[in-house]
Image 1 (tube, rainbow, N blue to C red):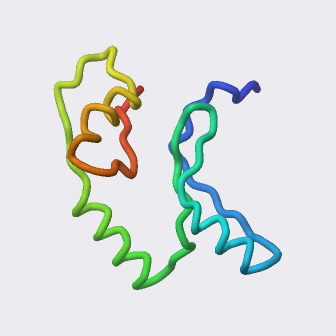
Image 2 (tube, one colour; image 1 turned 120 degrees about the vertical axis):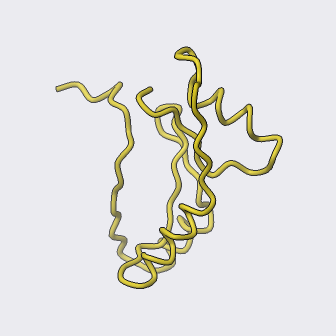
Length: 93
């Protein structure tokens, strides 16, 4: 199966051999793969994970009635004037 154009909405975990490598990835934070921005974050579990999710949910804004031709990039550009956009995606794109 050719996954070249598969949409990436999942998560991944990277195990590194050294903590300095982990810190280097986390300090950069944002990456791009096949024209899609993604973010590297610390691996969290338990209460730390729940607090992180709560924080993310509080910062999300639901946008509806988006025309079908709008892309993830279009959405990001439209709302960048309000500040740094961590992630922007059209559901079902």
